[in-house]
Length: 177
Image (cartoon, rainbow, N blue to C red):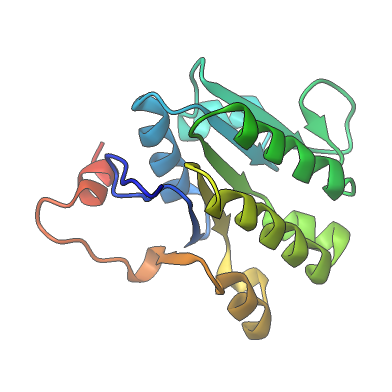
């Protein structure tokens, strides 16, 4: 069942946000979480830095840090299968949810593009059959043209440098918060 959130994001949809830093993606994520939807962040950023720099915080947010360190809610980026299972489990545990995936460039560096592309397609298939939303923040300069084309396939694309908003747009209001 596809529904629109307050920020115009549709459930059952994967959004690929092209941005140098995860600014818009974190704003969209936080906006949806504030509306009462539980969220999961999977990020290369240290969780406290994510909270401080991008104001990602709240009781309904779980964060997974992509790191070779050891600890709770830390997943080694080489272990992409267990990461996929954690995301799938989060989707299954909640009637609706939002997932922010930041650090695709690092996952690609560690695992190779083909592995990461298959991982994203696997997660995308779980999102499409649910009332959840996936936001993937990606730096377009980190990928070859062919790789970007594959990443963009079957996703809704928001290109931060080229984005325009109409008067009264919920996305425009969000950026001004």
